Image (cartoon, rainbow, N blue to C red; front, side, top):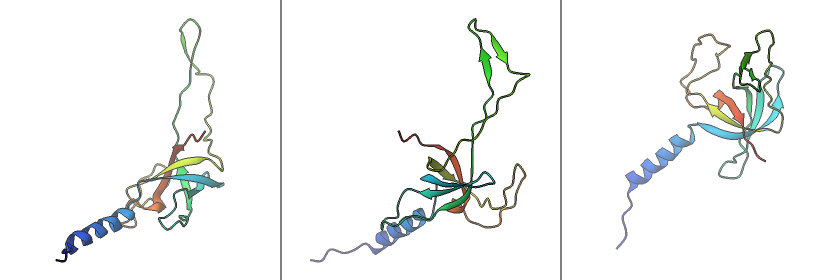
Length: 138
């Protein structure tokens, strides 16, 4: 006797896989270019299932950790460097392996700290990536 196929189950599994493949959450990338406007072009390191490279992600912004520096002397006293300042430089360079996350909504209109209008219904899209940190590959 022939085993019957569950076509609805097969369809739902394929549909789920198709939907999930269009949702981007995070990916490991290598920085290939540092742009003059302090954005970065990156190459995703994970290949597609057929072995081809994924397209580069262009002009990504990078997050950084804001740091306030305090000095503690040998006696345990804490000193605020009030008359001094510390400069933090975002140190992402070509060849660095980074983690890129993808924002929930279209960020094409995001500028600085202003509110922005969402121009499309795209969600978790590869066009809305942000570098969140380096991966230590040593």
